[in-house]
Image (tube, rainbow, N blue to C red; front, side, top):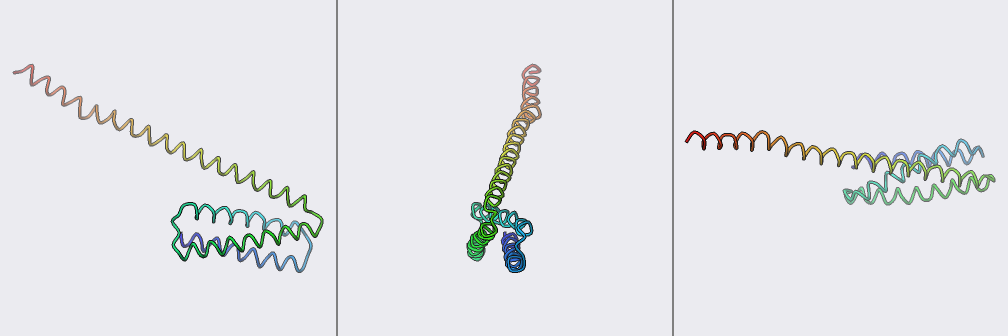
Length: 149
């Protein structure tokens, strides 16, 4: 978990410095919009890590600071889009990111359901095999003992 938070924070820091540099030198929206996905993914991963509840105190502090940095950076990106007259493009990008995140959540839920189904079936087969390997021979042994008595 420590490495995961550190990687997310490093990605956010890199995106922050790159966006500030790009914003100072150009008004090209396409070069800035690529960082929107990076920030969105970092935000998602931080939220996932926090929801798991396995963060140490130090990681929780790093995660909270990274969330603040992501929030500030998102505001800066929104402002850049707005000032350049492309606020509708920003909204479209956010909508596309939300759709992608929703698809990812559905895929994760589908995989979790498949895994749960697999283990349920594995337990059922385990019971069947246990019955066949233990109960059936025992029953036959008792039956033979009774008949040969």
